[in-house]
Amino acid sequence: MNAVRVLLTLLLIASSGSAIVAQTTPQTVNIATYGSTLGSWCVYGAEAGGYFTKNGIKIGNTVVLYGDPAIVSALTSGQADIVTAGAASIIPAANGQSDQLVVIGSTEGSPVSLITPPSITSPAQLVGKTIALPAHNTSNEAIGTALVNAYVGKDKWKPLYIGGASTGRLAAVVSGQAAGAYINDPVDRGDFAGLHVLTHFGASQKLYNNGLVMSTRNWLKANPDAAVRFMGALAKGCDFVLDPKNRSAAIDLLVKGGPLSETAAADAYDYYVASPFRGNTPPVDGRLDPKAFANAVQLLKDEGIITNAAFDYRSVLDFSYLDKALKK
Image 1: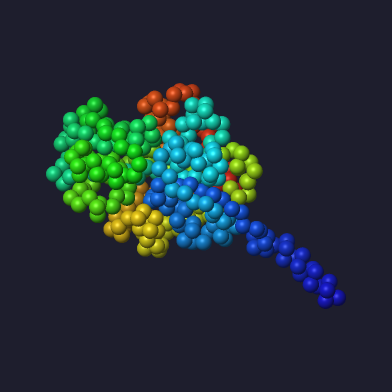
Image 2: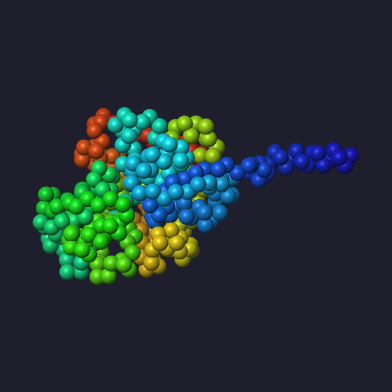
C-alpha cells in the first residue's frame, strides 16, 4: 500500500509544471554580443537575476564582437546560436544573400550622442567641420548621418568614418582629426578629459531601433523550446534593469561589462532608464518596436546600403518565441 502511495505521489509531482522545469536538462545556448555595454544590458540583467538558470538555459560560449559583418558571420557559421546585433545585420537577408536571419527581439533603441570639446556649444559651430562617424555602410553610420544632418544641416559637415568602439572616434577629436564624434552611449570620458556631450540624440530612441536579438531559421526550427526559454530570460533581464530598485545593480553591470567608469554608467542609467525615453533602452520585455525598426531599415535603403528597394522588413521578424515566453 505504501509503495502505491509513493508511486501516485511521484506521478502527481511529475505532472506538475514546476517539477517538469526542475527536471529539465539545461539547454546550452552560445551567444555573441555586439559590443559590451548598452546592447548587452538585458543579457547582464538576465545573468544577474539568475533568469537563464531558472529558465533551464545554460550560456555556453560568449563572444563580444564589433561590426555587423562579424555578428552575421558568428550566426551563419554556427559560432553563436543567438546574437545581439545592429539593424544592418539584416542586410544579407534584405539583399537576398541569406534566407536564414531572423529578428526575435530587441535590446535597445538607438542610444547615441555627439561629443565635442567644450569650446563647441552649438551646432552652428560644426558647420564645415569634420565629424567622426561609425564605419561606413553600417546601421550606426546611416542613423548617425540622418541625426547629424538634422542637427547641423545636410551637406554642411564632413564625415570621417571610424569603425570599432566609440573610443576610436573620441580619439579623433582629441587628436584634432574631427571637431566632434558621434558615439554610442554611454561614453566614459575619463580617458578623454575635456570633452563634453554637446547633445544626446534622445529622440533616436523612438525614431530608430538599432538593437536586435537575432538567430537563424535552422537553429530556431531545431531548438524552439530553447529559444522560448532564452527569450523569456532575456525579457526578465531587460525588466530587471528597468526596475528602479535595481538601479545600483544595473549600473554595476555596465561598469563591469564596459568597462566603464561608475559616473558614465550612472549617467547612462539616469538618462535612458529614468528619463522620458524609459522603456526603449533596454526595452520593456525585450520587445522590438517594429515602427522604429522600419525607420532604421528605410535609412539603410536611403543610403543605398540595402540595395533591394522591395525588401519588406517584416519578412525577418518572428516574435512568436518571445510571445510564448511572456505568456508563460
